[in-house]
Image 1 (cartoon, one colour):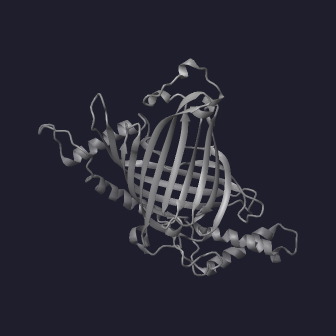
Image 2: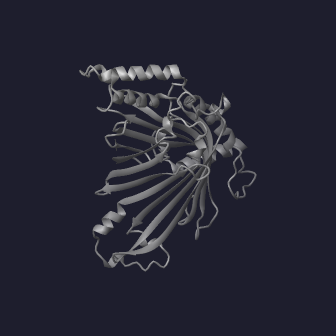
Image 3: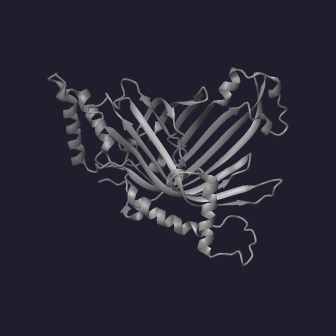
Length: 393
């Protein structure tokens, strides 16, 4: 049975967002005369309009307020020849849209301190395209992750805390197999497809092809859960001397934690699809999803030869030097490392990301992953892969 509940969850969460956002207050309120006061709902609507006028694109359609949420990309995933799951194209898209927001400046003209808060709807989807490496080149849904969250941002601070968010999310792979009979039929179907164009009469009895069909069938096993997620962003700026250059270094720290509910679809379905008794070959009955994905820390670092003057007591001397290769590499390259662990800091996974804008335009992305949870359907299995592609945002 398909447990994604993406559409139903989205509709219900949108209603919840509008109710919740009406009761959210931000910091200090500026005094308003009785003549200037409107109704409560007038103020809510006007604050949202002001927020979108500054946060969204100035002109365009309704979707002008769409923006990136998690890093998104499109690329080629490579594996070693012994890996059952073949190489493929991978597409990940992650967006968010503000349902409501407001802005306030707690500072003054000499020292502005702008803040914002908003309630967002988000969606993250991940899909694999198996062209040439699997029969009929299927498209596999790997992750469906809608949610709604509240976010508080410190817009104008040059260092320190940048944001805090708290939200409710549903995560699944959008698949339908939830019993052994369906799984066995899928294995047989895929095995027949593998051998359909194979002239070798021994194909159907070849253990390698049987193993391949079994591994491919696990992609269609339904997995899903709901969770509450809290996250924060902290940014540091400092100066470094590198090969005779004084450059600015920006380091972003993203820390998040999950708390899983024992239900799905806002409670309409009980339990989490984390343990499957009839999949004993790869399923570890005593392990839970929170043993593999509870805490996540991402450290993103970027060099900037043009930003040295932003640092206090920077002692910059860029104006006295000519741009060189180091300037080009620093201004067009950033990298990050992501660490993921269970609730006891167990089952550690890591991902390395490297993005370089060739000629300042084409965003080349390189990625390497090693750990658990690459595929939700086999989240307890450890794997590794590399990817080369395009960084979307």
